[in-house]
Length: 74
Image: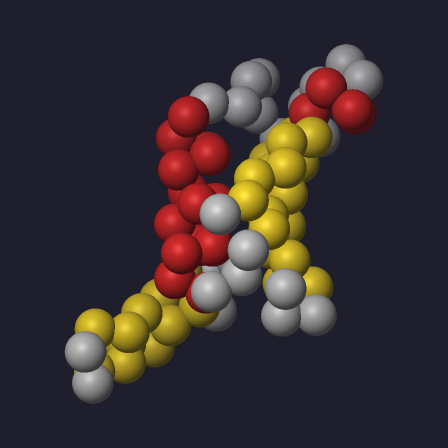
């Protein structure tokens, strides 16, 4: 769970990350026909809010797994 910070207010009803590795890498897992800009925007939002610099977007519905992997960084 990634809480939302707004000034001095912290909202616990934040975003649900799929995986957070060592507080440095966010992994978002999908099983969709094709990854879209909406999926990229989602993980970029997670990166901005968490302070992490690197994220992986994994799509398990690709013919070859390497076709379904995208690395995003701020």
